[in-house]
Image 1 (tube, rainbow, N blue to C red):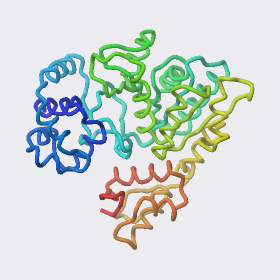
Image 2: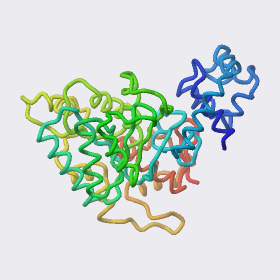
Image 3: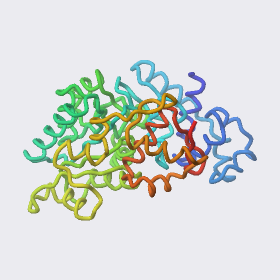
Image 4: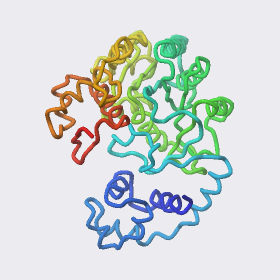
Length: 367
């Protein structure tokens, strides 16, 4: 375990090897260790790697930094989650640029059945606070156990985390820095509470500071690890708008709570709705209806004993597969009429239940 982790940490540190390259390499080699022990001629044949990157891997020798990081994780009970770990967030794996290695401290299931990101401006209004608290309260009533994800920042993020704790929902804070610190420092107490039933998640090693360029990188994890992203209140610029754009790129459903046209703190939400980049959200009931979760709550479909109990969207996908050996994701979308977020969620749940399996080229087949 420790030996594997040394190589996993090293893979994240090799110059010119980014998220996409690491994901590609792990499709050809079973472990991080096997990547470092492979001959250069074998590495350079992997698509997108080439001679320069292959030599960069072979020349890497700074394993001492990894040993120091392991000592930190052992001392503070931080759990590493590598890309091929069964507990790695499956939704993130659907993205083209998932983090190679995550660091996690907490109890929340990162593959919970339902995960929703609730984000917004740091300088919120009373309206934004009220709408966030009401959304979390009603989600707790309608969907007990739904996991709320946000960025532990001032404003809407902190309100979402606090409301989740109040209503006994697991909540995960995605950090833009390492676990050795909490930013902002005023949220240290909130972070401790969250680790009791929720958790803290980051891709940054322990001593990484909350540098400005880390926040957009962090936002892709918020967008990618959830079924849907809800933007409560934001201006036209800032992290929430970046996260909404990333979520759209990952085929996640994006929702925005509208505000007054004269309120600059709602200008971003109104723009997302106007540009058809987000659906207008008023209540948790709206979100459930858009996602197809309301139908699942009202009626459980009776299935043959061959399969576990499936929701209506999941049952439809299984039906499409019954007469075909394999179906492409795009064909599922066209024939089912589902929104991208609903389709991605249904496919993920079927994978987790081992009803279907993902093949190369975004093709799916029944197990």
